[in-house]
Amino acid sequence: MIDRAYVRRMARYNRWQNQNLFGVADRLSDEERRRDRGAFFGSIHKTLSHLMWADQIWMSRLTDMPAPTGGIPESLSLYPEWDLLRSDRAALDERIIGWADDLDEAALAGDLTWHSAAAKREVGKPTWLLVTHMFNHQTHHRGQVHCMLTQAGGKPHDTDLAFMPE
Image (cartoon, rainbow, N blue to C red):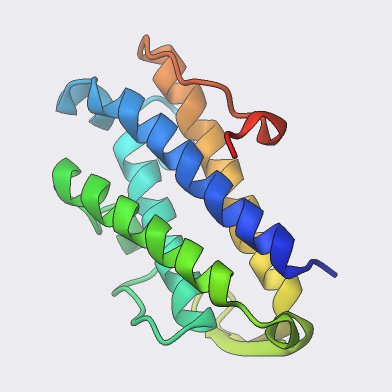
């Protein structure tokens, strides 16, 4: 099982890496951010929009935050405007950090049950596992974005957790 220290570190890693990737993507043209590069969700913009939607979904399950509209297919168009995606991402990252800082160890030890639209049924899992999944999902899709940014000529900074600034 994970502990609060892990959750706090990963919340800060999430913010650090989003600042890294959004900073590089911000220097690209909108056309370059939206170019289909053959990734799972196609473009940098769509992948980052999906990741924002997924983080909102998980935070709605873990907190009192409202869930975003739509499912996975709609997640790609949840943020049609780059500036709104960028500003909402920064705000959500701060909210995730606040949640992590206030997280109770007992909450991690419990279970969470929710209706999964993807699985089309109720699902229940240990909360610590789902929190780990949320951070792993972020890392997975940011890796795709890192690759697409590199293809577009961008140069993201270090992604190693061991080198995250304190």
